[in-house]
Amino acid sequence: MRHKYCAHDYECAACRYDRAMRRTARENRDLRQKGTPAAGNRRKIVYWKDRLREMPSWKRPCLHHMKGRIEFRSCTHEYQCGDCEFDQYFNDQYTVHAVVRPINVLDIKGITLPQGYYLHRGHCWARLEADSTVRVGLDDFALHLLGPLDRIEAPLMGKEIRQGRGDIALNRGDNDTRILSPISGVVTDINPRLRDDGSLANKDPYTEGWIMRLHANNLRHDLGDLLIGDQAGEFVDQEVERLYDVIEETTGPLAADGGFLADDIYGNLPQLGWERLTRLFLRS
Image (tube, rainbow, N blue to C red):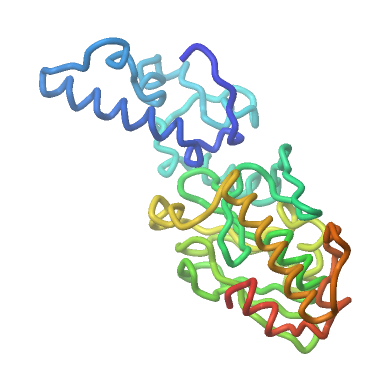
């Protein structure tokens, strides 16, 4: 491949193109081992890590260098990052504390949704990082719906969570609820600031407002139940329209165009009911 722009911030696990190329490269390798190589240009496809391994060891660039995060450093672990102490150190010092701000963000009737983020129907997002690590947070729709939160509590590090289970607790005043985890796995990091001030998520839901990071144990299966791209955008649009209907049932007709949602639906319209809103939209 001579040139192709990356659309997933170099997080290859989120890229369908990379998965297709990896599958083709694996099939080519199996055919060569059987003595029946593929025909045409297809037989030239080799997985990019295998290509890099053909280089002298001192010339093999560390993946963090390839992503532009560090100066040149050679790879010392055959691109098996899970065995690399530097990779573990780097993720601890960089990935947890330096959150990449999304560039391409959709605006759906006042609700923001970054490209490349997976969305659970319970309004929790998942962003893929390196080596089956996933960052999780609450989406902008839910935060508009519930308003500024007093506290968001993730499970403790080392705890196992399950996709679709209410493992994350939210609190506002006398009201509590749980949100459904978008991914199954083991918690590796939490954002401790949200325990003291959940409203930080309202200010910056997709970066500084992340709730936890986890190591996914069945990522391919779990991603099949999530939405991304146009599907996620259409889902949020439908949720906004459904919320308009709920508001009209309670308060009377809205403007013809519906308008944009306020930052604090529950706070401005408490008659909608906390339990009703969380049941209808968080599926909790």
